[in-house]
Amino acid sequence: MTLLEAIKDRHSIRAYKDQPLADDVVKVLEEQIAFLNKEGDLHMQLILNEPKAFKGPIAKYGMFRNANNYIVVAGKKADDLDERVGYYGEHLVLLAQTLGLNTCWVGLSYSKVPGTYVLDEGEKIACYIAIGYGDKPGIEHKIKTVEQVSNASDITPSWFRRGVEAALLAPTAVNQQKFWFEYVGMKDNRHKVLAKRGFSIVGYTQMDLGIAKYHFELGAGKENFDWV
Image 1 (cartoon, rainbow, N blue to C red):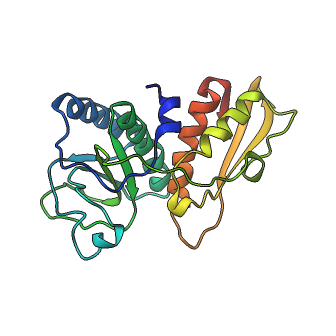
Image 2 (cartoon, helix red, strand yellow):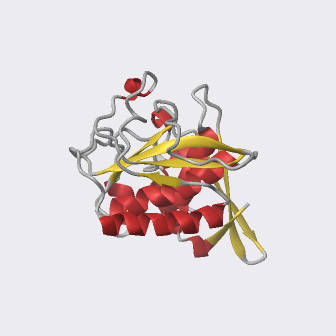
């Protein structure tokens, strides 16, 4: 499965099989986590065979089942932390999909289990990502149109529309899709694209934007443009 295929195949899954992750899959995930932590200045950690995080008084509202494996997504406090969390965390989500796994971004409905993760000075946990073998396929959700989230038109490049279409398949908090992509034009012989988040009382729009930007890059081809 390619990453573009993973974008179309991925759905949020909350119920998992009571099955540990295969050793070779764990190896690939841990290697990629180490790389992305360095690339994105984050402190993501894979936690295995730990059943308590999604069974506490807060976690029960998420209605998870057999969510015994997860990624703790943490990093140093910064204005752009949530966007980096979304961008690099989605790298892992789509990689997991290509490895035959399923995932779910979790912003609130989890419990922090002492001794399962490490935080360095100045770091905080931004979210968890549940990961495992889904008990059943996920379901598609209604999404906005390309025109509702971008200035795509007959005169914008075809790759720009493909990028927006990929972004529309990105997971966002309560499926809010509060982002906007704008084709700005050419500068210094390079196409320029602006991405920004909208307002939401739910929150998580900065994290959502990071996720959507990674999807956009995969759909549009990162070599075709520069972010403004």
